[in-house]
Amino acid sequence: MYVQNANASDRKPVTVPGLRAMKAEGRRIVMLTAYDASFAWQLEAAGVDVALVGDSLGMVVQGLRSTLSVTLDHMVYHTSIVARGLQATLLVADLPFMADRDLPHMLEAGARLVGEGGAAMVKVEGAASHILEGIEALVTRAIPVCAHLGLTPQSVNKFGGFRIQGREESAAERLLDQARAVEAAGADLIVLEGIPTALGKRITEAVSVPTIGIGAGPHCDGQVLVLHDMLGVTPGKRPKFSKDFLAGRDSVAAAIAAYVHDVRDGSFPGPEHGFN
Ligand code: KIV
Image 1: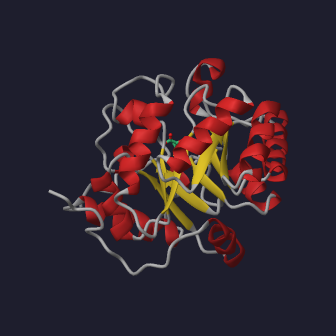
Image 2: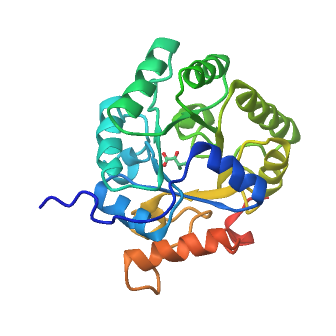
Image 3: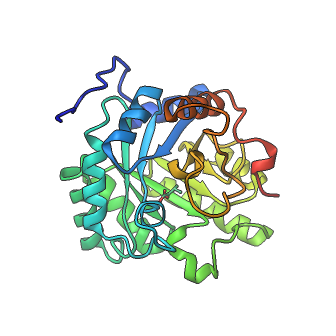
């Protein structure tokens, strides 16, 4: 069955400059992960602003314990099939583990995710000096970048697990500096993951780039969740920062619509989803 464009929508396309305008106007940005065309259609139909093909696919699609085994080929493939389900929704794709090891690899990965995958933006984790250099190089070559700070899953072994970051004042200051550094390098979006609510607020106020929180409290300019977590289908315990939007609803479409609604009106995340 050939179903491309089955969801033809008349939504205005979400653009990279448009995200900054949303921050400036105080309109919350709704981001959600997707890994295939069928769910991408659901995001598109529900009015999600940004679809993220996260390397979380290693955990929720491939059944692995971390994101570290996901390859660039996996990312390009999943990005390309998600792209088929989208029209107005902006598509962001992750650079997988070690695709950022040096500038040539980073540029190659960015070029493939955009050229073959159809992404409009790529996401990179951390703010080490080679990452900042890479952000600058990608942006200079017209590849917009989403930075990802805080509990960056590709650093799980360095952190000793999926641990909340930025709890002590010195660590909070470091994350604040990193946010300013990725902004200066040219990032157009910053995902803040697994940090105290108060720090999410401080960073969001300190930068002009929109921030998207996941376990970073309600004060970010937008929110992202892993699709399988918010549909309650991830095996094991649901992360504290997530919510099962399918519980009490009768369809995936209704669950995603509720997520869009609750992020836009600020009712998700609630205080119970944050860290102090
Ligand atoms: O890989 C992913 O899905 C992510 C989100 C958790 C932000 O990076």
